[in-house]
Amino acid sequence: MQNPYETDRLVADYLFFHYIPHAEGSEGLPLPVEAWDFASRLVSELMDQSHPARRALDLGCAVGRSSFELSRTVPDVLGIDFSRAFIDAAETMRTHRSIDASVPAEGQRQRAFTAHLPEGIDTTRTRFQTGDAMDLPADIGAFDVVLAANLVCRLPEPDRLLKRLPDLVAPGGQLLLATPFSWLEDFTPRANWIGGTPDSAPSFDILADRLAPHFTLEHTTNLPFLIREHSRKYQYGISLGSRWRRR
Image 1 (cartoon, rainbow, N blue to C red):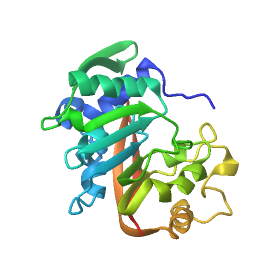
Image 2: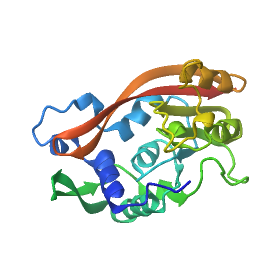
Image 3: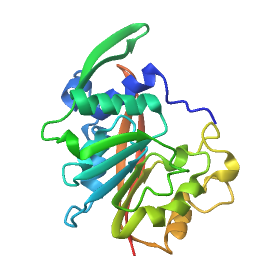
Image 4: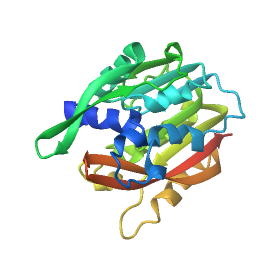
């Protein structure tokens, strides 16, 4: 399946989504602040930071914000994404700490912005590479934290990732998942959906059953997010966030 995440437009959209603060991005409009800064809230609202972690893996890291947030407490963070354009942007943020880009304002008018890496980020703790979450290297090893955000329902074969997760998360480690379960045949053939059909159980129930042999569910929360289309049009979504402990 062709990767749709390789355009300059999507890179700019995700840079805005990951790095622009509410005060700047909302432009004075009444946009819900609780749905802003999604990539940072994934870590702050899902991760149990009372347990020391040495290695973390951010699957579907996009342009890198969650990887950088993980690095605040984890000394070795690997961000992986299928999109070369996203990884190039994340690497640019790591090396230069900012990127200039533009997003649609209205019609053909563009709004220029600069994405800045937040203060307090030690970029030597994070590295990025392209990769397929369904076909990770056999020697990638195990991690104390694995994050996969808004990824499960964008994979052609999500079960391939689910079957690999027990090997990716070290015993006692944390699996952090977030997904709105937006099953679309543009991304996932219907035969590979985890739920979402008239005769199926809810997607989260099926997901929980498949993780139960190796993981214990510790925490769930709703994680709203906004995807910008132009200055006055946003998509509002709510991911179901969950934290699982590897037994």
